[in-house]
Length: 469
Image 1 (cartoon, rainbow, N blue to C red):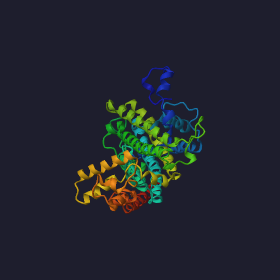
Image 2: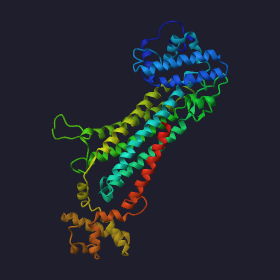
Image 3: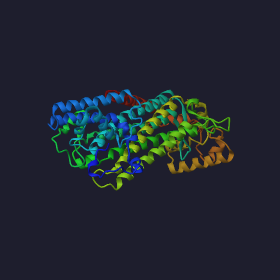
Image 4: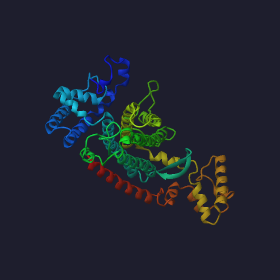
C-alpha cells in the first residue's frame, strides 16, 4: 500500500529504491504519536463537518484498537513492510474498518503529520533528558556535600595552579549541566507549537480549529505559518546542539577523571562496575565508561553537523531530505540520555583519595600567588612581587625544594622581607583556599553557599519534572 499511487503508471518500483527510501524501520518509533495525532485530528474533522459523527466514531474506535494492539504486543512491527509509519497505520486501519480508513487523510498531509509527531516526541524526550540531567546533578551535588573539607590542586594548562576545594571542582560541572538543563527547557519552549492543520504547505482546506487541536495535543500554540510549520526543523538542530554541548561537558568531566584516576595522580578511583581490564595486561583497570562517554560526544556532534548541513540548501517547503532528521534526533537524544545516566552512576560510586590530593598540593608551588598577594598587602607593586616570587620558585626548582623546605636565609635572597608569616602562607594550601572568600570563590563558606543554591535548584527541577510526569 502507498498513499500516493494514482498519479503513477502500473508496475512495481525498483526494489532497491524501495529499500533505500523506506523509513518505517526508524519512524515506527513514532507510532503511538501517529495514532494520538490522528485520533485528535479526526475529532476536529467531525467538528468541521468534514466527517459525520458516525464516521468519526468508527475512525476513532479503529485508531484506538490499533493503539491497544501496539501497546500490548512489543513486536507489533515485526515483518511489516511499509514505506513509513503513516502508511502502516492507514493500512492497518483499513483492515479494521474498511474503506472508511481512506477518510483519515482528509485535509492533511504526511508533511504536517510527521512534523507534529516529531515535535511531540521531542517534548517527551526533553522531559526524559531532564530526568537524566537531574540524576547527574544530584550525583555532583552529593560529591560536593561529602567532600567540603577536601582540598586539591586546581589546574590551568593542566599545570598546577592554585589550591581549590574538591567540592568547588564538582560544583563547576554542576554549573555546566545546570546551563544544559536551561538550554533543553528553552528548546522545549520553541518546539511547543502545533504544525497539524498546515497541510502539505498551504494550510488545510477544511475549517479545522487548530487552537483546539493544539490544546488537545498538549501544545502551547499553533504554528503561525503553514510553509514554515511543515519544513521547520530548527527545533531538531537546537536539541542536537543542546545534546552536543551536554556531551562536551560530560566529555570534559570524563577526561578529568580519566587523568585523576591514573596512578600518576591517584586522586580518584572508579568502581569496578564501571571499569574494564586488559585482555593482555593483568594489572590494568581502565576507565572505559568515561572513555565511551568521551567518544560518544564526538558521535552526537556528528549528528548535529549532519542535521545543520541537511537544512543548509533546502528550498521551501517540505523536501524528502527531512526524512533524515529522525535518525539524527533519535540517536542524539538516546546517546545523551544514556551518557548522563552512566556519568551519574560513575560519580555516585567514585572513591575520593583525599590524602593523594593533599600531598599533591605541596608540589608545584600552588601558593606562589598568595605569597605575591601578601607582598602587595605590604605595599609592594604586584609586578615586583610577581618577579620576586618567580625567582624564589626558580631557586627552589634548582635545589629540588618545596616552599616548606626552603630556609628563611635562602628566601630572603629574593624576598628581603621574608618572615614567619610569609613562610606560613607559602606552606599552607588550606590557608590559600580560605583566602578566596568572595562570591564564587573556593573558600569553604562560599562553596557552602554554592551547595545551598544547588540544593534549591535541584529541588526546583525535581518539582518541575514531577509536575510533567
